Length: 293
Ligand code: GUN
Image (cartoon, rainbow, N blue to C red; front, top):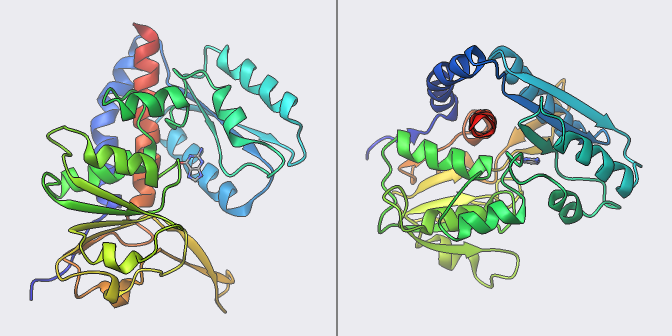
């Protein structure tokens, strides 16, 4: 049997950074340093790690980024006023509000307040609407990164059956739209499974490409898939163990269980994760370029 291919987001993201560098240099030469504002409300440890990884990458590439740390008990009006300030601040071409927000804040209200031209996450309804209409502006970073991995490894989606597990606005929903667009890079038949799906294995067993984004540690096992399925594991779950850190990271897929049956799989870590940041950089560079014209 052929060996399972490891789809390395680490490798693909390095490729993205290499090709972005010329665009970044040329923008900076024209006097524009792409800038990102990251809004972090509260002190969720996982969000803290993500935000630090994002800003580290921006610094490494010579881009501008600032993290606005706000207390967990901030009121809606104060947060909206912060976002208005960032919308009108010309040094920021992109604004990212790290999710999830504390439960007293309605995420939709906050997302609606973002200038859609600075919404590098692609979460604003105008950007999601454009994607749905087949006229994308900013495509959400994780789904965009997954498409880039499949392009890099020449996984052709056209005519394939893609099954997406999860319907979040961040990953599952936009992923289902992207994979079914009438475009040469897409054109799949897409099924989306979620908490209301009665028989998940029935659907996943038919997948040529399975995209797991449900946030349940090691949910997908070999009994969920057919021989040769391509698996994209979006999950990054902390599972307690007796290591020094006190936890280990696992995906939504039980890697050891599916490893021999799948034809290709993204690892956790080093799969989808690095691509989310790479696409955030790309979207911010695009936002900066757009602001110049
Ligand atoms: N939380 C988990 N993933 C993301 C993401 O891609 N963007 C934002 N803003 N928050 C997240």
